[in-house]
Image (cartoon, rainbow, N blue to C red; front, top):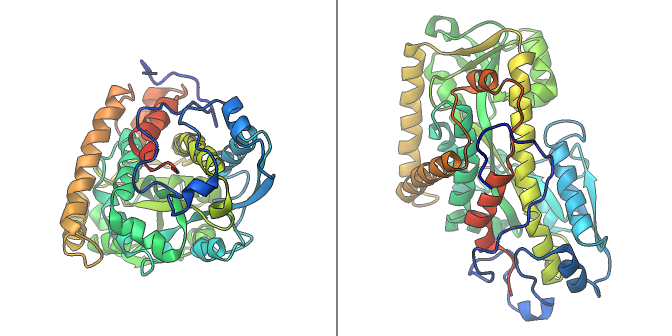
Length: 423
């Protein structure tokens, strides 16, 4: 499974069978409830389609409603569609999934309530939009700017490291329990934020006094540390805000930048020399009919998370590479004075986490740092080469595609399999 270069063929939604390296039935499994013996037979990890078809032969067909992350043609649309299609295919049609794009049922910060009352069965939630309801997750979000080293590969590492920490932090799991939902992907870290600016604002003098939009408290703290004025505009209003000069820059992921077309009005990408301007996080949650599904059906859906994880890497990387051409002003890193101010703020955010009332902040930091080190080694072992920031990475890649299936499979083995629904 080990790629020798970054030239493997990209396979959107490609499903690899999960390796049965860990025993099913571990404590803390998704859907592990009393009375599990009445939920039908268990299916072993790595089961074939035929074995799943046999296990679900007597199941009444069911349709699940899945409110996805974005529009069908933008952002994570291809990933979410591939995930739904894999569930239907592997269940031999016993489980169909209606994918709803554009948040037609509830806003992304209210998905948990719709899962509780049955309006949704699967949903893409953004816990950081509701920090009072997800205080432990908010602390993990505050660590995101300290993850990685300013390179593209550090984003691959952070996705895996953050997922591992989220699964292994009891307070994060308790946040979801209190909301009455079941996490499938408890924290889905996006790639690094950057500033998308109308001008090449990469020096302390140019950034001082600039008006910069960002959507999270940690980002606003970073913006204010460099002498800029922070404000919050919904991502749907970023284009107009930049076009009209209401804001000079918008801090967000380049996936959002590509989806909203802001490169037309803010063609300059500005990023730190190291680390990042934070990262967005989301979650894939289950509710509604989830608890009523046979155990084998829950296991089948959970096993298809490999498609979901693989798709996240693919679509995010696609958009970040495309942005290197789409943003005509180019990719710029800030000067030393600005970098020092940002570094000081990152350290202050870590100190805030350390004194958190929501969880053991010292342990969270230690776990996060250890997971970063672990997954840096794994990503290197799998052959993903670190060629610098996204601009350097794109230039070195020179149009070649990347196979993320080994990394997605490794995440399933190392992180997700332990929490697989069990008897």
